Image (cartoon, rainbow, N blue to C red; front, side):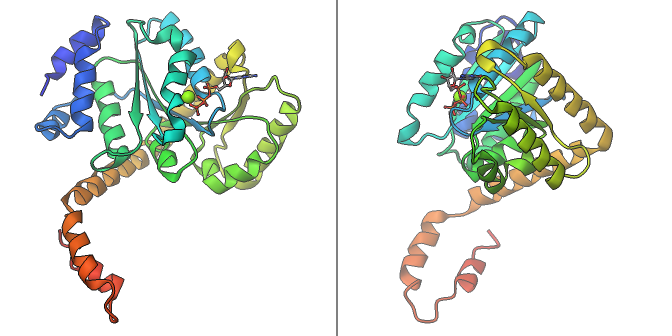
Length: 301
Ligand SMILES: Nc1nc2c(ncn2[C@@H]2O[C@H](COP(=O)(O)OP(=O)(O)OP(=O)(O)O)[C@@H](O)[C@H]2O)c(=O)[nH]1
Ligand SMILES: [Mg+2]
């Protein structure tokens, strides 16, 4: 496995080759990965999760955020989780176009990751990767996920600050309530505010937030990402949320969530799925088959 020091050196020089290699090794759980992860000494750089429905403008917003950061001499890492269904083949290509200003920039590292096919689940892979980013000299770390499935919502919940991007379209409020986005949002962005009725949507959303959330309700920021309008306000809202986090002890909750994810992933890795399948094939048709009894024999694993 590659040395953290060498990766850090590369990042400082704008050479991400070793970083990319380390990421692949972590994704594949290559030998030595656990020891490597345990050797990390992360700095508490806040992780910003950006989620929302397909095409809401998440990548365009990130593109605009990067402009500000790079102007302030920050090193930026963006991890985007690709749902990796055949229908999303264009996503990576699309991101390359949307964030084109940054793909070759020495202070910006952008990586797309498949949502499926990770040993131990995408959450534990993402946790490993964000911790790696925190350990090799980045100043800003962003995770982009498409908020359509529960797993993507969970990935976003690994972030310190979760930004939910919506567009002013009728019906989105209902969809949002269903998909659990209201619970995970720390900041709402209503992007594409150049569309008609954007302000009505913003008012609706604010009303809904008042009715459904307690203390520290999420701010609602209007943006036109393509024009970089509202981006400074978004930066400020993210910073304010992060300050409030440090104050009220929520960081402990975030860590607890991460520990649970790791334990879960570790336990799942120990489960011999093939053996279960073989046994199940023999037993599931039996008249007295009981799923709880059947599962219990594997609990100790
Ligand atoms: N009119 C308008 N178009 C926008 C705005 N922001 C983004 N777009 C356009 O919306 C389209 C989708 O933008 P993306 O940034 O790729 O959206 P995304 O949420 O990252 O999309 P996925 O990653 O595929 O889910 C692009 O054609 C953008 O140019 C905006 O504020 N106004
Ligand atoms: Mg995108």
